[in-house]
Length: 145
Image 1 (cartoon, rainbow, N blue to C red):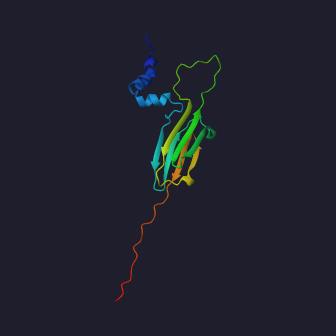
Image 2 (tube, helix red, strand yellow):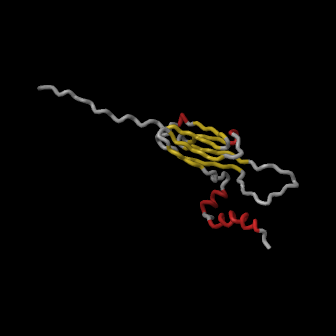
Image 3 (cartoon, one colour):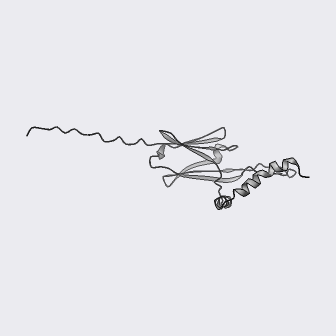
């Protein structure tokens, strides 16, 4: 007879099979995984990219600007080292390289980009370039002629 916990532990595998798509297969097969979930928020003065990076140090994460408009976030999650007498029953936490790329909008201030990692949360802030002021109408004096 199966242990009652077996169904609970096997549910993610069944869910993964039902959600299997060509796009997910491409991600799994690529060298750098794009599975790091990110939130992208737009504020009046900036764009903010937020990602959970549990267990990673700032040195494990690289934020770069490529081709003058592509924000690239890369890093590597390392698997814990265990002795030969330890065996995994289930391994669900991802390990290995990850990468996310975002094309920045034209109003992004590429020189003002900043990144900070605090309590396992990476926050990348991209300030916006203020829009140009609309041209003001010029008053032309009318003379008697």
